[in-house]
Length: 73
Image (tube, one colour):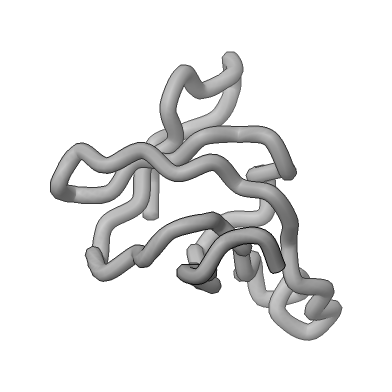
């Protein structure tokens, strides 16, 4: 991989796609570059996101959310 730090973040939502940006509780912005396929997680409303960088927070919010998407974790 081209980056040293790769984080996998599990969130309670299924509407995030590659290319969207998320922000953590410290205001650091990460771009989602992929999702980990997990059919069982999707059935439970959970997605696993891959981002470049070291994500250490507990809160994830979308940046510039499209209409109809809520800000819930």
